[in-house]
Image (cartoon, rainbow over the protein chains, first blue to last red):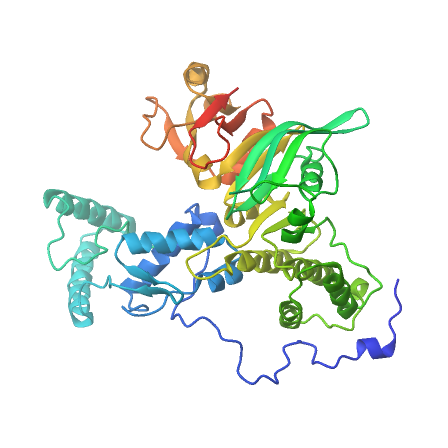
Amino acid sequence: MYSCSMDIDKEVRPADGRGGAEGAPPARSESPIEFRLDAGSGVPTYLQVVHQVEHALRLGYLKPGDQLPKVRDVVSSLAINPNTVLKAYKELETKGLALGRPGQGTFVQATLSQVTLPELATLRRSLLAWLGTADAAGLDEDGIVALFTSALRDFFERRGGQPGGRGTAGSQSEGVA
Amino acid sequence: MNVIETKGLSKRYRSTWALRDFTMAIPAGHVAALVGPNGAGKTTLLNLVVGLAAPSVGTVTVLGGEPAGSPAALDDIAFVAQDAPLYKNLPVADMLRLTSYLNRRFDDGYARERLSELGIPLKRKAGKLSGGQQAQLALTLALARRPRLLVLDEPLANLDPLARHDFMATVLAAAAETGEGEVGGMSVVLSSHVLAELERVADYLILVSGGQVQVVGEVDGLLARHRVLTGPAGAADRIARRLPVVYVRRAGAQAHLLVRTSGPDEPVPPGWEAHPVSLEELVLSYLREPGAAALPGPARTQKAEPMEVTR
């Protein structure tokens, strides 16, 4: 065992070691979003990152021109391989959703939100009305999901997979994160 | 460029061969994990790579052909041996000074900034730091040498989960540091028992058993070229005769076969289901089946080689 003399225990700096003399807090990522990982999901890490960007685009957390988290920041907050983040960003570039600017970072290029907020609200209202009818007819939640899913599949199969309205760059992407 | 290349590398300690005819290459720009059971030869291999031991037979070169242990190689390699080797009685500041005197290149500014970010006091003796802080100090000293290859022997073994996370975050951030969109300034080779964390951390795998290479390759490629088939136990033998099977788990009615595949488009035998395999499952299956091997063809220098089956 070591015995520690008094002056060694007394530190010049505060215990957190961050000093505070520099003034400004350490610069965090300028991106509006941060990634998280679900280790148990079985989804490859790079796809989780891709899905989370797409999800953020659909919900409006990310807009064109916004910066995605810097590779170094993602790597040090999640302790994942830098090549994984690069692979995800490359995939987003291939989908036309993001663009890398050398020396600066990767930026959002396109949006995935296809309709305006008031339109969404109207659609949601008519869906709720339909749900009320289904409930009154005696369908439980699982029954409604099954019916909706099969109708959805039929609808898109009959249309041959073509987006009907104003599709955007990401309409072929693989579902919600 | 290969950061490590071995040809017929063998090392004998008295009458025991710790490594036998070990031939493989690790291309630059990866975080490579060296995995294998205790006594497989991982530490021996790393000691040969950093020049702490000399081969009995064969050769090992680093960083595009420099002989391991040569002055040119040593300048660009940093090595952290097991259990954070530090002079426990030296204060942190003296460890910094000592390391800077003993090396041609040492980024003192980086080391001090890093230690301050970690809240490691410069006056404290190294031996008085927590386990996690000692590991971070040893890592900081290694990184401040600005190596092109960082070699870590069981760096996570004695760390708690939070310290493991922070340690790997430091390593990976340093590997990513060369700039946005371009990785490859520093390659990393680490040996580890912590399989669960490997999938996130490593993109290159070297599986060692009994002193020989069992599996080597890019993780993505290895996972894409393996899958698990689940189906009736009675038909398992028939499938195993037709397909390259690595490992079989069999119950009364059902069997799981880890098989090599040419890709996701390869047809699944009727009555069987195909599932993708995780890195942990892949590693465990090979470890349980030391006779199976997945090695690239004779040209060991390039990635994305088709896999050759030896069984």
